[in-house]
Image 1 (cartoon, rainbow over the protein chains, first blue to last red):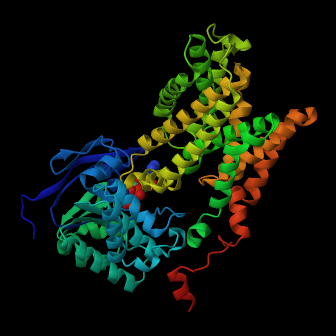
Image 2: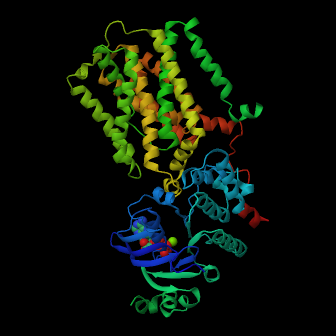
Image 3: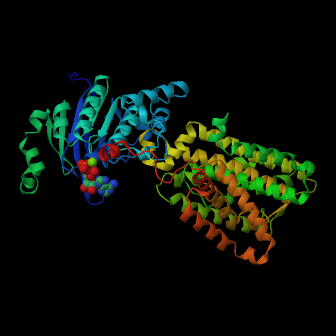
Length: 251
Length: 325
Ligand SMILES: Nc1ncnc2c1ncn2[C@@H]1O[C@H](COP(=O)(O)OP(=O)(O)O)[C@@H](O)[C@H]1O
Ligand SMILES: [Mg+2]
């Protein structure tokens, strides 16, 4: 496991307010280089909002995000990508009228690597084969199945050449066989040197893949630790069980 | 070679038409040359607009401002003793500066802010030009004696049209074109993959503004007289938008077909007083027909006719195929 001093991402007291709703309430955690770090929690807990604040889709209302020691707050999304932090979208956002290969090419040309010419083509091909989309390279992304679209999200983000890859429910809507494939892919990505930040609902995948995780509920961090301990935490159990115990969980 | 022709069915007619335009002064009458000049002017306007409005999906309703900036720069500098040719780059530079001034505050906002802003900007420029002393107010300005040379102007306009087409086609093939395409299809996704959307939009806006302003400068030299009513006209802005929409946005051929259609329409409209007053009705009708029946314009219609773009997708997605079997 990564060394204690291999911190790559430090999230400190990040809050995000949407009008009257505090979607993130002073969330803090640190991610070590080479980890698979999961963010879990019930629907509406603020997980996707957290990713959006990390990469600069929109700025956090307050708090700080340091990536390899550098403050990211105030940077645009494209500037964050250029530094090596990239996210996928839970609600997939393919360029529907572009081919699958061109979708990936956007990440290759404009991400951190900004490759051109033959090098760019090679990287597109490499991403296609790593995500098993090679046979779909020349079809329009609009016709892909949900499983393929989730893989395209990964392929494009990966194409940019990140150090940290933030995966937002890439297993949502997949069948058990596809989930198995996705788990193999995530593990392979980590083994190739990437740090993975992962929002996931499938408990089996979370427990099987994560080195550590944080649990969010109503925008607050309610637990953190290794999956074995954190998932058994009473507050976490209560949060997932819902209403009757919600008050204790928030306390 | 055949593969190339199949992929670009407009290549052969396009080259033949370009050759026709370039050779026309040798055999054609002046009346016809005037119509061809106008057609080339429309090709410049429509294709340049298409770079930002079509490829990047940022619809501007204020492009007459760039025609006007180019035209006024040419007339004012020519009256100060400049050669009309040397005024063209100055007009282009001013148009670029103006495009950035309009784009910088509006491109950072999402949604239709840019479109709304361009309507106001176009009108504001017209009102200002009508009110200022040095622009000749609403009565306009005349070019100095001895600046008229139809043949030279004709070749310049046709050359500008071909340059515009070549430039847009080149940009489409390269990284920049892909970025514009990505911005149009999903701006959040484009930014999440590293595209600096504001910069890309500003660049597209600036390039098209420069081309349109050069066209405006040539317009001024050819007509020898300009007024706010002729170059800052909202009708002109509307025509600039409708040509690529009717022809087929985000394609190379579409704006050219739109330009052919609208320059023909304009000749017909100008020839008949009843039609001239009902242009909005005719333009609006065309727009509705396109929106209802073929949002991809004439190009889309053509692709459907020759079966290049089937109505339904030919290959079912893998997931559905599996479920069905
Ligand atoms: N752009 C937004 N504007 C207003 N409210 C939002 C926005 N995005 C998310 N929210 C709200 O913030 C809360 C957290 O949402 P989200 O981060 O998507 O949750 P999760 O990903 O954990 O399911 C929800 O109540 C959601 O409705
Ligand atoms: Mg979510």
